[in-house]
Length: 289
Figure 1: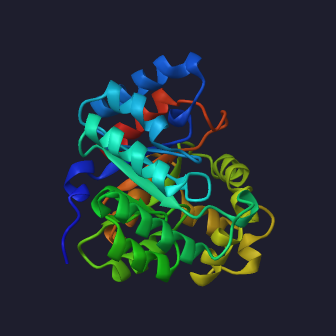
Figure 2: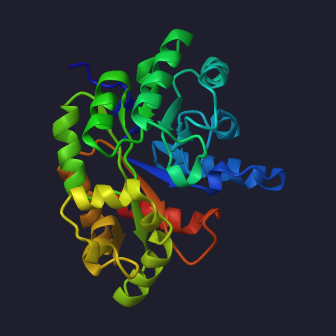
């Protein structure tokens, strides 16, 4: 099996952020500065949260010189494959090898045309192949076994969201050694357990209403009780890294030891989800540095 070149390119750690995806022209300068700062801090990639696309990545690529920028994710329902291929080609020409097209099927609750998601994703990849988008410049937001196999066979690898170290280990088994495995992990820089878990429950609430995530938790040993009332301590502690620097580093290391090549770290705090927590990113850089 061929090893994905992304493994060497993006390094061990990246930042997952909705704020960096922003479209408000007034914030363009700060987003560019933040991306350049993350590059200087040693992060190998930034992953643009929400339903992001090439146009959101372009300003960040322009503001940096080595940083990889990926969508996490671009919904296959919102962007036609032909349009995705054209925007990819334009961005790849301007910044060769630095853009990753992260694709996903989103959720039935968020896409009116949602139907036969696996078949639709296969068809989308077929169209990208025909348009010349290289498999090694795209990654899939895979949770279940079939989509992980598709990540192995039709993409550079997988970028699973809201998963545990145990899921990472099973994903690694399915992918094999070659493809990239880059799970997202939420980080809360808070040492008080009650405060940390309160922040976690506030951020996980919207995801516990989405069957793609809850079904994945149930597949991996959690129960309906774990999903109730904002999530059990067991669930929260499995999908969030919180505490002091040593505890957070240990949780991140658990994902690496389970087989992650790269961990996309998402800072969670009491601010707006689309903010740019630049001071917290600096703290995080010292934790993983």
